[in-house]
Image (cartoon, rainbow over all chains, first blue to last red; front, side, top):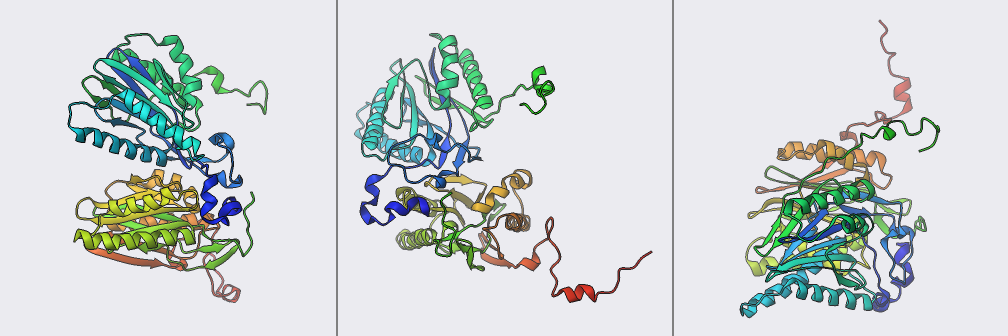
Length: 262
Length: 233
């Protein structure tokens, strides 16, 4: 395989220059704080990227946009939001195999936490910190977990919502998004989010964001999951699809006035 | 693209591989072409490889990589079966494949479909594409030929098919992919796994239906020329 030839001959040291490509990726996750806790939404698509072979092994960590022409909407039922312990929800975009690995790390973390059997349990702030350390340390070894993570939860009445990128950038906010969501959803949220949204208003707001993403993100599929976390616990609702609107008169015959245009 | 298409290129299985669950088990299917660059190194390969008595794997991508991964997993599963005292489950086999694929993702180039039957979950199919993602599916398609089958399966797939329906679907699908994918060809092999055991089937080219722009195979032009004139009314 041409893309592996340069350091395939280096033997065991060939991994020291690792970076990675994403192969099967999920797209945006959007999350908001609302009155009772956190609401998080993502679609259920998993894209398979197949044009990577044209590029040689990169030395720098670069974004997946380096391949702009080849991808298939391959998996349409990928659950990209998972509960973590009693108090947190984790949503991920990026490479699914790395997300599955992160879930295994967290499973071990929560298991050890439970085994202490001391009445304490890790809250979202702690889990967020743990994830940040993992992502940043992997980035320092030039072998990142190719994900953007959204971590939300409630503990002792305190709502928490944060994000970690594949290079370890982390912060908290009242609303966060990953991937395309940052460009398309967050501006909507900046305008329309407010403290103490009801569950219904929160869901409607998220659906507005997911619809925009469906129209404008090539990797989005029309199958969504909305997850909710409150002091009482986690609910991940069943998958559903949204109605789309194509009934604009401008859509009917766009090239009538300028034949050959688009 | 800087792909080396000479006869010295690494053996790659262009391939079409399919795994489908049905009411009672699974059907795995594959073509039989292994190519080195533009040359067909093996026109009758067997890409459906046994891992245990009840779990098989369809291999695609690099022939060497997929063989070594399945060899390791067969070895581990054998030990696991002895220690467990009963047949390994399909889920365990799939997770072993995932472990090797994921932890060596920078070096391996192989997409695999694990299928089998165990007494706890019945027939199960797991797809493990490049990168080492593990995904359980009612059916899975893989290899270069699978690009041509997404639309076909979107239309034709049904839950709860019978064994014969499932096998017919798999054979039809592989045959369609062979028609359009240069890297797939040869014969169609299927493996059916259920509570009763394992059945291997073999469908050579002449047993497959003809698709668009394909003609009925003849022994020679002479047979056509010497054939009696068609009747005119």
